[in-house]
Picture 1 (cartoon, one colour):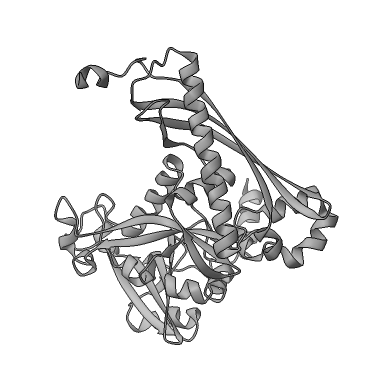
Picture 2 (picture 1 turned 180 degrees about the horizontal axis):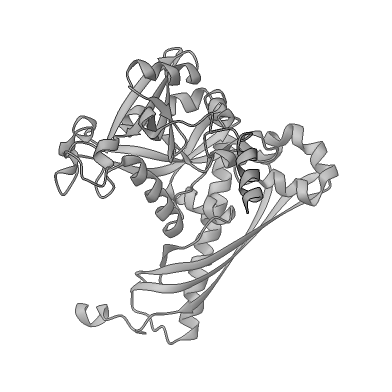
Length: 395
């Protein structure tokens, strides 16, 4: 036993300590970071957690976050310049959100992302969004309800919305960088919008009323060509993109009833297969979307016990899905000439030799690409009642 203890003591002499250890009281933990372009400089904003207000002993009632900003010729320089204002070094190891201003996104985002991709302290699982019609610093300066740390609100809202609604899409840094360098697929990033009064939104007054004067809302999908923002998809187009790119988890879609009125289908499962083909040197894409769902609500006179009625509802959903998908693809071909679906990747998988001939001129090939869409819905459940009570109410 003595020999064993002596051995442990002896070898412990050769063990080094944590030479790069830093105490928490030396760091300013950034929950969200914003990138903007002002003139020829980068404006970097860091939404930093206030430790004293987050303690278990309770704070003083002040804001649980503060915002530091700095400008520099590079993003890295701006980060370091924040120490002129912040008493602690900005630490991005627990980053949840990166917000990029629309103006910067239009100029190009690759240079601003470089520093984040190199930093070994940063986990690349944070979400990236584009500030629509505003600067990133304005987004990070809004106080929020329910979640006292606005970065938490933005992160959780995007995650919940993506799982429950097909009109939003989360993307982390690794996924975005992959799309930026990919052959045959361009990047698409969800937008976030400031709605209301930004002056009141930056104050505590914003969260002291039932209806805040300013709110943050995810809105539309930013379309990139290379690393530059070239346009936006509206909500219906974003939904179609989600189906085709196989990112729909659950959602709801209103459809027309056989005669008049509407019903709503709750989508509980969706699976899309995108297959590429080349015929006589011309690329072609076949999209097959298999959907399973339930009848969520009925605002029309139909009998859900009738199998023909169920079949008509399924056809209505399928027709609307095909029309929306075709419209979205045609819009991207005509207005932006950008393949955010990864159709080029599908051609590459099916026929690598033909892809090598097409890839250098893929933008033009995409603009004339033939696409075939099939949507197949299977309704599983109709709810606990077969006829809506609205018929009797309106009699």
